[in-house]
Image 1: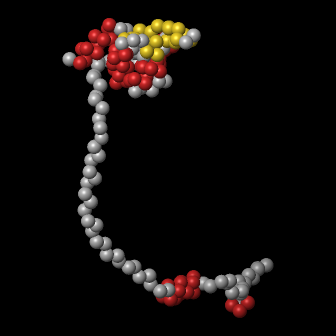
Image 2: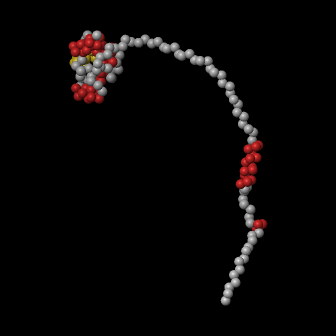
Image 3: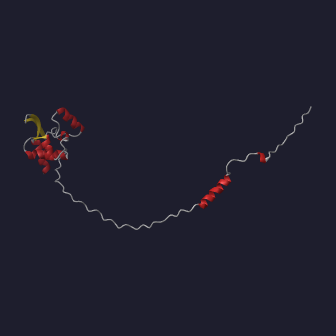
Length: 168
């Protein structure tokens, strides 16, 4: 027995195939071009810029300058001012008095002059810089003022020497 096989070719009727949804790529491109032509062109206006007149350099403000404190090796400017204030006073001063006369922040005097507590002073010296007490330029004592124990500071001979060397 022999089998007869036939190949059947079928053709699809194009009217039976559903049409694609939406516009085709060619139609979309044509619509885009038409929309671009319909738009009004944007006209850029050029601004004419005229050069501004040259500015004069501002006049330098003059300010009154205080006399610059002497430079003393190993000391900061506030420390020098404190030494000068203590020397000029000629008597022991409290921290508040010394700070006022030397124009130094009173709270910063803990670092500049040094604490009367040796442990705190040692810690501050290690953290910041050597204080005037640690350097032996200032000494501190406790005085009874109006029934209160107040720490007062005075310049030592070594402190006066250091200032005199700086003046030369």
